[in-house]
Image (cartoon, rainbow, N blue to C red; front, side):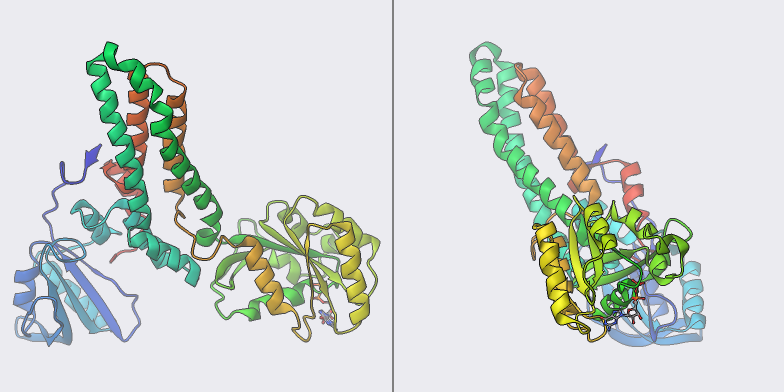
Length: 453
Ligand code: GDP
């Protein structure tokens, strides 16, 4: 294990990367390391004023490669904490290739994935929570998940972890003193264990709880639509997809015929699962009413059970209502435009069958009730507006580890063992912010990054 500031991995090479995707009007190349200033001075004709964009030409000897904007950030006030420059080039493949060749010839090396953020961490410019947040922000697909990542980038979670660490460190030093004077102090210190650890335990408990609820904000909630053939499942899928223009991807899921589509429901990322089944309504399995979607429903965060509201509830509908017992479900009574009275009667009957489930009376045809349904679904899944503090699996796992160690410490009757457990909890917490880290952990975190960040 190493610690930031005490055992820095020294980084002396200068690396560069294209930070924007190819094909845009502008291509940004950024570089970090000690060669940045001399190399920029040797290839760029413009005036180099610190942190100010200036216009000039990039030349290789007498050959002009591009006219561009360049900016130089001197260490330590840069993203990585080292000397850095950025070039805003014309976004052509030929220009980017020529400039990259020139930089390689000047002794710069291509940056591996995540290298810039890794250096920012190693130079103490950010902790690991913030580095994780950079990646989460880049991957954010909805406004809500971006906001959660931004909060972490600003250090919200880091500050709360540090506060817990402070409490434990204070208590740790009391324990240390008791180890030096066992007879006089052991009983006294042991009696103070619950008082010292319970606030930290309670704070960890609420952060872990927050993390579990907010997993949805990052990964998206799994939503499954079920219902009898012809109830209007595909129509609902299409209505929901039209609901929000922020459709992110459409890709094949884990098995050949399960298709997921991502959408944003009132800012909450949602994965609509088994849309393949919905689209192939001629599927014989669907026809007998045990669609694949129903199997998916068992592991869904939210189920939408679509019912044809233009006719009275059928035995098939009641069967499906029974199957959803124990699931978080909204009964969606569709085709309200055809027979509004019948739809309302169906809603009443469904509420009587299961009082705890939400209902929504809609028409996919006229889109009446669709917005309201989307809001209901988001509210049921929603992890309170703005309340996302923890969204990262790694952080949750380490907090759970720290909490388990502190819980064990509560039951110990020797200051030695309590001391060890508190130290072990502190070590888990240090792994969150990166106060202690291993090369392997850094590789795991930064290999998820894109090149150029
Ligand atoms: P699925 O088999 O459950 O996927 O049902 P579909 O979405 O294919 O819909 C079955 C039929 O009902 C289609 O002919 C749709 O046009 C029709 N339909 C779906 N929703 C509505 C609605 O709200 N109003 C009316 N009038 N027809 C609808």
